[in-house]
Image (cartoon, rainbow, N blue to C red):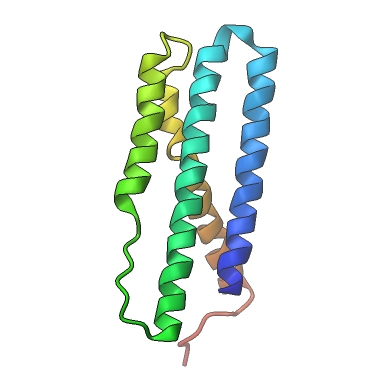
Length: 134
């Protein structure tokens, strides 16, 4: 779980850095505010979804450690509702938030997590940390 927490903190830093760039873009380029606003709304929804999923995974792992029979789901409906809320907000904004960039923003945190996973695997293979050899 230590790797899990470390990866989550790194993804959070990447997301906050991306959001700070988006806010700077929103302030510096008024002609593109609708597009940048869409990225901001989508990224925030993506971050909420990733944080919620991480919380549910921690609950699931704790239940496995404690060997409880309590059923724990991963909250798909809740995460889908947050994404749907971001899309509805974008549609109802009257053109001030672009739908296309909102949809792109919904994948920012997941892409950051995927890229971080690839980097982590690459570093482990470069340092000789692979298991199962010989």
